[in-house]
Length: 369
Image (cartoon, rainbow, N blue to C red; front, side, top):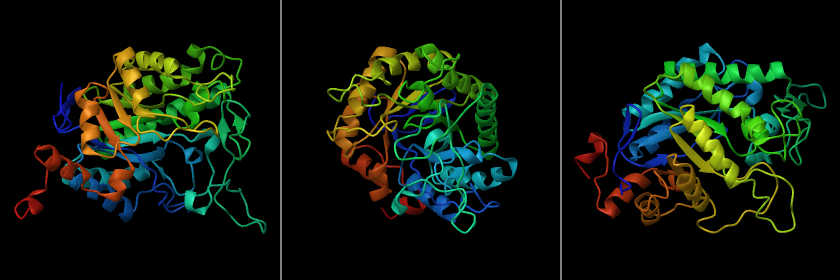
């Protein structure tokens, strides 16, 4: 079996190790109309530091495909050509610092138009009490069913859905122009694609609701559209929530999104050109989620074993030994780190030293280390 610091080949792309930076929102864009969605100097420095720290792949945080697809007014967005150059700075910084540049493209759906977490995370109004602009908007979803505590969304029409698919494809094309080598489609955490997948939030009776095939239709249409414009030699990743965590809560028999459905989605997605499933969980309801070390990675391992599709594991992978175990045992093909990289941008190089592998220090650093 491979080890954590062996390279991995996805299509024509070789990534030099299997420690990857998970997409983590920083809510640091300017919300004003002209600057909305554009990366700043903060984003360049933030991502370049983790790349220099030795990760093989760094995935830029959720990047909205349309303005109303942002989670907060402070999110990144690549919904127009005039933003390509801003994102090209980030991709170039990642590559110059040694990592493969990746980007996650996303639509927040019914969880959009909220404030930053450190400001409470509540709904952002469209206008203030005195009529002032507050940068909020009306969210959209598969049905007019709100996420608990958030705004009521507008139900998307068939034409609206077609527009969403086109927006994902257009954003993927711009990401390629900006120099990214990996694109990840966000279908997790209760955002738009996940909300279509889950019967908790999808109450439609048309071809996008009801059966698993219908609920998966939008996600697979997005995969098809992205794959059609994304270079054939570059990989496409799909982030999923393996479970809504409803089935795991005793006494609640509501239909929800489950691991078994995730396995089938992974198979369908792979047939359409997805190269790896990034397996997270939750986010589509307010439920209790276990705090055990394997709460997510054990479900990622099931998806890997039963679908045969390469999987990235994420969640409470804090030590080099744990990350190495997941890869060497075949439970995951790569590990995606979040909080550990916020605490220590050089986690990957430190882990390589601890495991007896070769760290990837930049030449500007290597000669003195």
